[in-house]
Image (cartoon, rainbow over all chains, first blue to last red):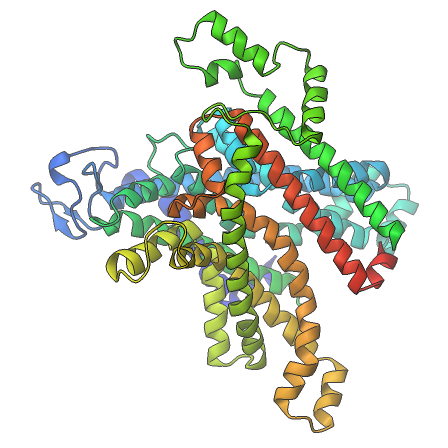
Length: 279
Length: 307
């Protein structure tokens, strides 16, 4: 673990990505203390104010206000909470499903493996966004439903990677040796195989953070997903689209944040992959 | 060869049957009564029953599935509720716009990304290599619909060079195609860079150089073809993904394709239409992948042995 961190700090780009992710995570956990104003308070007199405008109460709207006079910076900060929460939830649930399926499928082989592989082929036939959109529209808008839908549409990526790394070590001598000593199947799977598949698993998870944050924003942008009462980056972009010609600042900042978060997760994933698999 | 094609065909059919079952079940897990969702709140009992009969929801579930498969075989995907037309007709009306968009997006991605990736590999660790790597990373991380909005703001609203949206003139396709292409462009550039680097290290390239061939001949005659192979595989797979990615791009640019139809159907809660769109995109994906695999096996016989 310590060696891993040492190597990671040598990859400057991965480290930058990691630090930015931690930074956004901290913002998301401390929203009520960080947001300068209430993100829900509407004030028609203050609508569409450009960035750096000071309002009548002496507070500055650093990033301007939206079409209902709400402070863009405060909404941006609150939006980070939902993006992070959904991405973390979906990576956790989808990752857990993918990890278990990949382990079982790779280790047992035979018909169990065939069934799971055909299931993955079937799901892969549907474009990711189309499937997510359809499922959210059927289940209805809520944070929990978005987490469930994104988990169910993304578990495949983990399962495929975990399965192939199980296959690559399943026939190695140390596994044979453990089997010869009479260790149970479950113990071999979790005590001896699991530690070896965790690295590729974590790499996939960090790329998935980027994919899922953008997927969540796409759902909110189309008015599905998280209920519209919540400030999300995707919903802010949808507002921004309507007022693009008069108030460019509504659409710019949430998009920039999405890009920076996705880029950090990708940088981190790239660096991690290089460290774990020098090949 | 025939055995390989037969095996792949059989696999595709199994996947298709499973995918159609998934699409069928999707419509059945709607909490509550799908009919109530689709009719207005003050619909009479008679209207509700009529709708239920029309959709076959009064029959047992296995009977519904069999009817659904039977209709699918003759390309009858039911009727759109919000537009009152056969789904298949609507899909065929919107398909050409999407195919046009996907085609030009793929052309843009390939034409820009392949030279860029090769250039970065040849100039490894130079300033230009870093620029290409950073651009590729940006392209993979930017939400494409946001990029599309920014392009509209900059090129259409601010400078007035290109139209914001529309369909029919060649200038209408540039912004949506580029927006849709950006992710694939970045992906192909990165893959092309790494596969060119792999090939550059091979013995036969060293031999070619030792013979005294000029570098430009080595790169274009010896390296290019072999570095292209992994890229072609991915282009095949990514074409399917573009069909999904087109949903949000078409929405931004009001492009009259399948993606636009999808968003409208979802907003209107037109479930039979959504179901048809889901199943048609699965069929398109399965057919594309079957064709790519067969073309591959024809080109490279080792694939048949491996499978």
